[in-house]
Image (tube, rainbow, N blue to C red; front, side, top):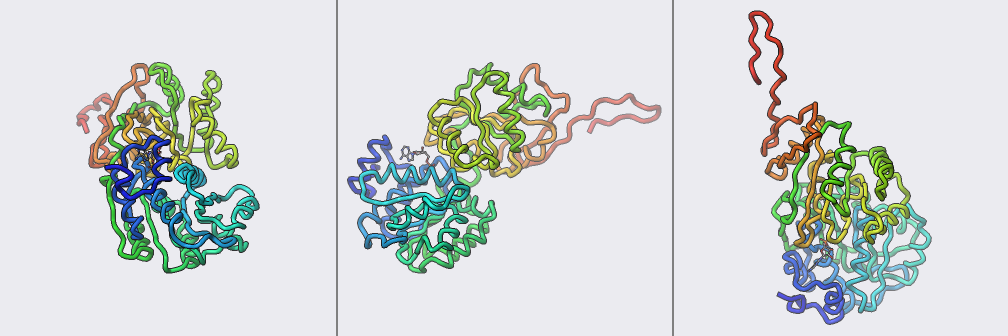
Length: 409
Ligand code: AMP
């Protein structure tokens, strides 16, 4: 199947050729014709499946062929995303796909001055990619009008709910015209997502290309048991021993991120950090430097886990396991994208056994354990099974008291 046979027009096909997209991904094969035909769509698609092009290509085509130009401050399509990073990324994809079309697009997110975003809106926009809070702020300042809105896209809708945006979402939805096309993308179809879809979508085409809660097929992932206090040492050791190039490293806390970056700098590694305490320009700069290959290591909290699109990233390291099991799938989805192969390594200490068990239950398999000689932990990580059970570790043999035998547990 080709993009042209899906009904995409020449300006988009030329852009895809330049990007070397040769064949549509499974999600694109289904979404493109349906969206072109004007249908509402609800798609369960993880990052890495090509979902952005899946909605952006037909959206751009419809905007270029249908409807009047945007009046001042009006937007013809809104793409709502949960994070600033995803906003920038989706916006960049839209610009790349639409480079031969005379459409105006912009991006708006919080944490930066609102004025330039208001200026962009003055002439009206075909597509606005925005985070919910900032879009509400813009509306509050009369900088955006939804009267001409023809399409609403919710990208990573589950993440939006996880991050507590449901109030903002509801407030926004109340402002939008009822007559519109709505496209909802979510990593999973959880109950809250289904409830949201029931309100938002009219006779949607439901697409579920990724089996629920599976990790991207091309990724090899395993864990190394280690004592908590030796994680940084182990990470440096693995980095050297495997000769890893670029690595995205996930750490639980902002403080932990900074500590690891400092430890890496002491060993003369080039590392940058992304977390919520960093001002937005610094986060974007760090991401761009990493993408450009100027920095070898990017250390991030889960803020950055979703939506980061870094091509051909071979290694992801979970320095700490995520608190929310689902984030494991999103984190390691940074590698092995669009058919590439990758490796994801988790450094797991005894304290994290419950998180490990929850992840294994979610993905329905136990993570392969690979002991690293010299780093075998004093506090052993209990054995787990694929059903999410923690099987007790055998106790260290005690000296038997008179008349009492120690039974192995
Ligand atoms: P997404 O799931 O939208 O984040 O896309 C994941 C990655 O796949 C991005 O780097 C896209 O540029 C890339 N991609 C999307 N569609 C295709 C395609 N049909 N062929 C090759 N790469 C693609």
